[in-house]
Length: 270
Image (cartoon, rainbow, N blue to C red; front, side, top):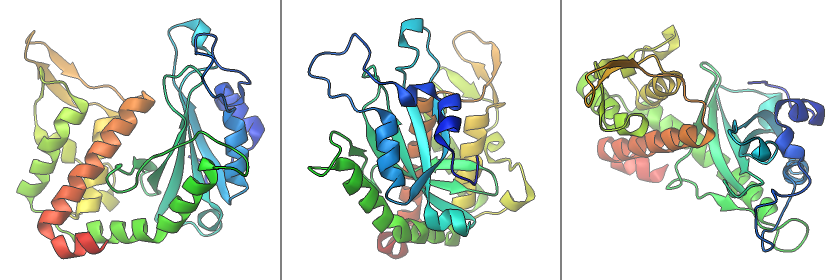
């Protein structure tokens, strides 16, 4: 992911759907269309800048240019002075009603280039229906994420302060399996989800364990057996925007529950 803001030209090259000027023909007349690029410009005006973008692949060529897309923004301050972790603003949209216009909060961890998505239990997702001066959902959402930045950074410090035993780490990994694998898919070794991919991740704190499990679930290469067919399988990298977010939010929710059990007073304060 770039540490520098993406220009509109770069955005258009990577995700043309951001610049679509009308909704898909199948949406109803009641559908309130807002071009994604208009929201991006408004977010830029509030000191958050796009640093990465992705759009979903489509099977139906008629949906090309209207599909779900995700833009991640980083605050001006964090671009000037990058830290180990940065709060991000996540903009989701589609022009075929497959995904509503919304803004969520995320965390970017530079050491592993991982992008976490904060669970709605920590930061409620904001739906976007308006632009301009009246009832501006974008301005409200951006202001709320900007205001919560210090709290989210404190949350990371709390998770980093909580040490997990090997058994607790394996319990975390076991609870994460349904986020990625269906019931008929059984992975061979739970500990495969706890294998770090760099020296910096050979630590036992809750935040590091969260990131290690997340990376292994998203990157794939986890081996297992299909209980229905008896066939072996190896998981592939998750490329779906929706599945990526689902796994991320589920992992963050598990980490929150562990924090409340291990250090309830500190977790509540954060």
